Length: 485
Ligand SMILES: Cc1cc2nc3c(=O)[nH]c(=O)nc-3n(C[C@H](O)[C@H](O)[C@H](O)COP(=O)(O)OP(=O)(O)OC[C@H]3O[C@@H](n4cnc5c(N)ncnc54)[C@H](O)[C@@H]3O)c2cc1C
Image 1 (cartoon, rainbow, N blue to C red):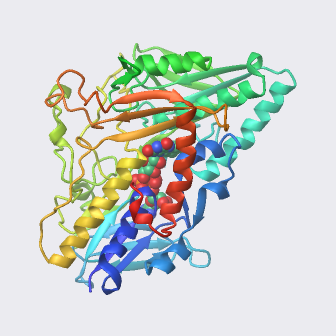
Image 2: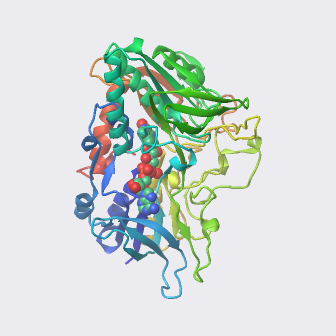
Image 3: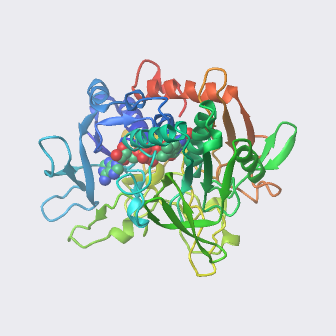
């Protein structure tokens, strides 16, 4: 019997355990270790943040699903990987720390034959002074944060109803933050809700971003087909912001927040301030802060993980200038080069480099978006890693028949821009591939016939449909595996 341990029940890890159990059956053990007893459909947190959904509508308890499927669940955090075991344990193991009520702080050693690290991003609020829901800004990265953001948004709305002016600042809260898409979506939803209440004259909405040009979204921007013509995402994004009456600040690295003031540095080297009454700024992301040790107890964290705490996999991490970056640098099986039974999926793997051109301010501060890994590739990668691990267990072979490189994979992103059965709309964008491949597609970097953008009511319906469909799939209900990632 083989034992596969997965760390992190997010989009990627949860997909991985469900496929592992489906492929391996009762003969093998599948273990999930994750601190939150709930699964959350993160994309719908945007709607929690504007009061259109409750946290209960975007989450469900994991244990009943895992019990039904025969997956062992431990409500704990992975804290250290020992890929060679240690003096007492010959088998590789992961050290975990329980967060389950009544067992808080209890440590345990969980041995494994294969380990998949799907710990996602650590929300690094601490990297920006004053940032975060327990300080001066809001977040929509988790359902709790989003519910808290909605409480504060209601206060701002009530003030406007009394005739008071309010400034909303939405965007990135760190010079190297990614996930612009989520912040952009939240800005549009706030604008829509203000408009719905006819409060526009009391509101100023400001978009602040570390992007060189708007529409970069951490993927170096894109050319998209829209109607009969081809347009850069810069124009697409700017026209949407203009339509929603949102002013923008770009090339800005937010470095400090005080009550009602965001301090930022621009690429021109200026230090500026933006006042706000309500701010939702995405923090920088890093890896889960896990350590790694070899069998003698020596710290090998820097062998297993990159400096940002994300795990090194089969990517080309050679430092090279932007002009030499290539689609082939990106990983396809997500296996650790140091330990063949160790994998990372979703946001937990270290990308070889960004997709956006790195920029430095006149003062030498790097200000540009780091690469995003959205839900769709995170799910696909989870499935591919699970399929390869199951194949290795069942065949006893070492090869990997399943591949998923972001340099070949396409992704669809639906940015909701207002919620309502008839008045709602969303900007739907598909890019193929996610990582531009200038050798294969010298003109636009991507396949222009599959890189498309539209905005309209249909997108809103699609986004709502995906909310129910992906929660159904995540609950592993009948036919779940036929629903694509
Ligand atoms: C507000 C918002 C809206 C978004 N909207 C979209 C969208 O519309 N479309 C889209 O494609 N993408 C969207 N994304 C991005 C998408 O949510 C992510 O790509 C996706 O969640 C990444 O999946 P993941 O499994 O790698 O990480 P996560 O989903 O973050 O899961 C990581 C899991 O690991 C757990 N964990 C953390 N540390 C440890 C540890 N030490 N040990 C064990 N477990 C640990 C966490 O608790 C969590 O359960 C959005 C993101 C945000 C924040």
